[in-house]
Length: 255
Ligand SMILES: [Zn+2]
Image (cartoon, rainbow, N blue to C red; front, side, top):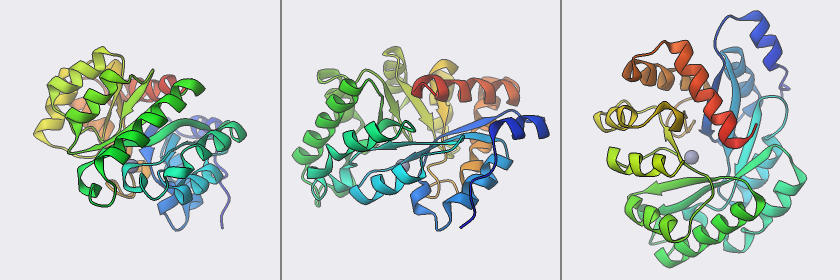
């Protein structure tokens, strides 16, 4: 398997392109993650945040989160809330062993998997992991499918110190509410009218860009198209948008 060889310095030196950051993807779902990373880095993506979600995914993510470009978040997502409940605390051990693990995610609620994982279990596992993140002083990465109102209600009652809303599914009013609390809204590669309204509504300070590759985008380098969308809606240069949203990722995760 090829090694991850590129470095941020080499990219900056060789290419006059702004460096990009993919705030959320799943490197563990690729057959050859090292090649995917090298390709993305060669296209200017200097920071990649890869996400776990299950016991197995977390172990793989922990092994992938290393080098100059790849960081990871681990946790038990709603799909695995019932099956992997007992592994919630395993994240703490993995995080303590690897400085490149910098958040708990993705965690939250998912209407689609409620038959597999009863809503109460999802909620319980979600809240338990918010507490872990707050204790460790690291952010949570939120997954919500069809449950935005409930997710916001839970966070109001049971606040996370820092939260990033991965693949934001809410409307502009919810985006404004969450941004006001200092949370980060992550924009996926989906050019919809709702997404445009969300980007328009909130300040660039609260926006990051993600690919969710290979689930939504094909590879982390697809983050470029998300930054292009943000720059066109905010009516600023691509390089300024790239710099601002990349700095948001680094600031949010303390990279
Ligand atoms: Zn994801």
